[in-house]
Image (cartoon, rainbow, N blue to C red):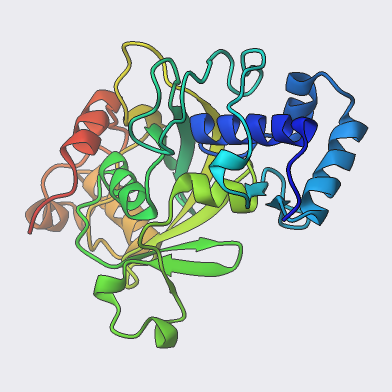
Length: 292
């Protein structure tokens, strides 16, 4: 492999520092701002680095730059502070990708909105988390929503399905991909900052959730993560019969004169469909999934 020139090394150093500190590669506009060149110059350099085998990108996928050369081939980033998407941090030394960031490097925070589809009024939550695996994101969705992790689940991303391999005897027959080790930052690198996911829980009741990455920011001093920052309405009871069963249930349990009211009270505790408490949801998220 040809030697990396000083200019190429500077580009690689910035891409590495940004990716390690933020959890996903930079946009070309951010590279242009950091290096102090025009966007066309960055585009041309990316083509050069790709042609020489120093990086690779996925065609049509933003923020998909992957460095292919060894870390000791290029220098440490010593340019100006990395700004814009990551507003203010400096890299003092090589940092681990996820835990153990170098001192002064703020962790990437991913803000998701989770909406239980076909509920009217909508049941939804807004959560913030550091970079986590899909298995951990499943736990955060469950606890933020108020589910009890009593059934199977799967994610659907860009037409592919991902699930926990422990609950599927044959992933090929099921048509799903083992999500072990797959992180949110990996998905952002593959699909971009406008990441959209489907999340299905309980294949019988068929609870479909829309999971939207609203924002990637940096951690705030004094704030603990994960946390639920907003939301509306109570999570349906388990095994209520899906969206239509839930609608019938709410109609009956909120109307003492409904002929099914007493039966609903015998089947479940009193239920207020308008109830939601972000602080309680945050406590559930930090406690984790129920142990059976």
